[in-house]
Length: 166
Image (cartoon, rainbow, N blue to C red):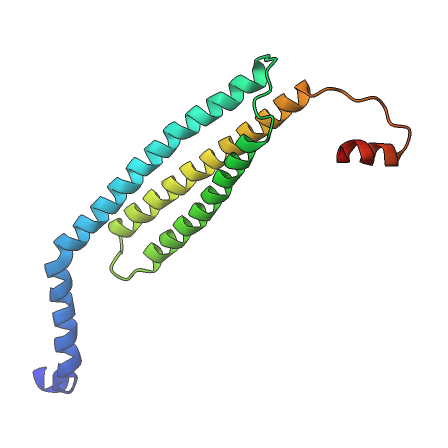
């Protein structure tokens, strides 16, 4: 049995060393997996809390009557839109990290599932926050539009364009 496998001795020894190396580092890998999952879980919880605040503000603005314009110079809307764009970018980055975790040969079985599910939960929390931000921005714009003065009817397109340009 040993004589027949002697021709593959080098690859057999290298494979055995790799297995032993993985076994030795199992604690290090497990620690990294645990920390990653814990950090992503904390981030998802934080994002969920922020989502509830933003969504609550949008819902309140949608149902309450107010006589004060909230964003007369569109600065808030611009800031919220920048946040939406940053969240979209972060979601794409998180999707890439989740894909990398799926492709990582060191992650398999339970560890792969824990890491990818943690990324999925965090991506979902970011997406919910993004949707709430969009809803708040639109609620602000609609609220302010409702309080804008109503113009007279226009006789022709030129008068409308001139009014909008003023």
